[in-house]
Image 1 (tube, one colour):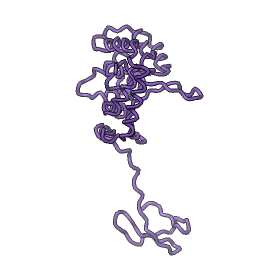
Image 2: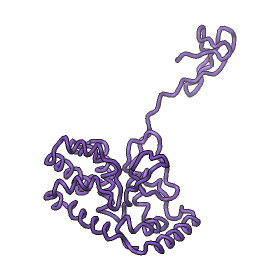
Image 3: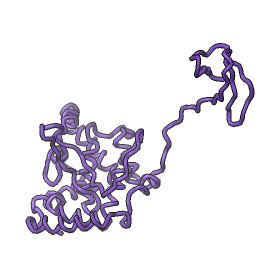
Image 4: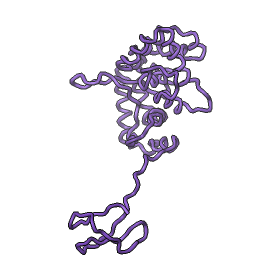
Length: 267
């Protein structure tokens, strides 16, 4: 029995078991004469594990969306398209160029400079400050850094067919693959997905605080009532892919249409 303490005397000496009860409970008695029920503390539990499908199922479905939010999205869409009725041709051309570079053949023959420029360009999607990536690139040199970056992108987009994209993303985020390029993490990995699958993944958006604050951060497009990430959750794959799939819902399709300039998609 674990140490029990008399709630009256705050003393844990001379405590005897009077009788055993079900469920690991016992009636115990202190020398002062006070009796109480003592329960063995539950062993510390581990963070529960959840399958990817279970996590993904927590994202809202079309019928879960508040109709008022749908109406607001429609109004904002109309307002946005009044001011910007067409997409940004620079973004569309940039996306098309890197879609070719990120193809299997394009990666094999890609210019190292094009790969480094992608990590630092803000055309269509701002990846934020990439000091870690740039430092690693400079330390490795163009040849080795470009090869590591190629393998990282290739694994994300064209990796083993029996490993879902979500799992390949998680492997790269957690350095489970030894060839993963240092600093090529959430912002850049999701930016690659934005370029290759613009209909599914939204751009990485820049934000700043009024005082300057953190200059940039990858933002997954979230539908209304995005499920809260539970404390201790070890993966980002579900929020990234689940939110991306959620943008196919009617409400979020409207939100995509609101951002043709950043996506290079004509509404």
